[in-house]
Image (cartoon, rainbow, N blue to C red; front, side, top):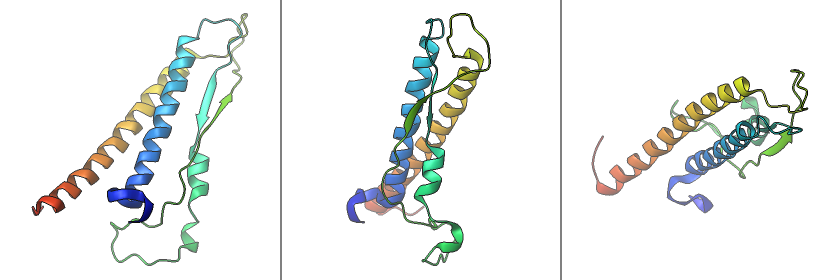
Length: 137
């Protein structure tokens, strides 16, 4: 399984995704904490575009899939996320660009996606445990 350990490329991808989701959660929490700080510029973590670039287009895949459950492409290197300051269209006298409602919505969405990735990785770990123990599904 190469450099990816027992969980292989799929596990490495999911671990990278969890790291990125956690980083996004940290940035959102910092934005919420600074919602009343004059002059504070809200920040965003955008990694979805990088994730898409990490994979070749579907029509350029070199391997064949014999089952719909197979991972369609190999995960290469971990994807990094860049933290960027953003401006808001809401005029505030203190020049703070945090929109608390938007931040709370982003936090909720990110938490749901983090939970999904965690469940997926846990399922992969449980399958590995069953194989090690010799149990059938």
